[in-house]
Image (cartoon, rainbow, N blue to C red):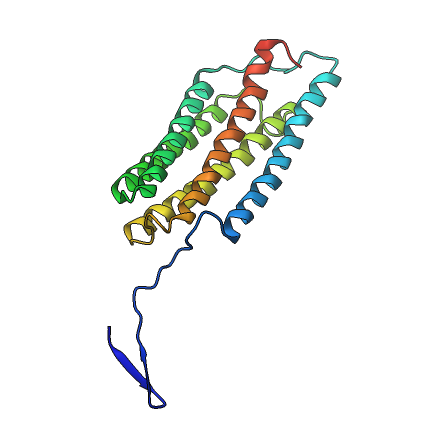
Length: 207
């Protein structure tokens, strides 16, 4: 550490200041909770619309029959595995294990990208489109909004990965990791609701 003079006085020149907040909570944490609450309400309204339209329909609902579960069920398992990988990586930085954090983020990123690719395949296999009818419009709107959130989550995970290689996080300062992974868990939770609504409830005889 070297000294520099200013008006005859000496002050220490400090380098290597931390770039992340310490502690368990910060403004970013509460901001993310607000985002999750807002986006959760949006998806709740959209999914409520599905059940409302189904309950009011005089024709069979869903109009194209039960959706096949093959790709969607596989995608559900993939997204849940990515959430576990992200959680495992977070546990690593909580124990000052940078390597575990990076591996967890990489695995979560790869699995998330696979989810997006399979969802595009799933869309291409549908006998309806966004403009076919109310059901098609609702299906592609809901799953499209979810994919948009997945893409945002992938960007967040990628930034966390880059920052981890730059040494931004430590056992004491990793709140950004926690916030980012909480968002990723939210994306996974929303997909479970979407999957249950569009894919499982017709097999249960609802709405």
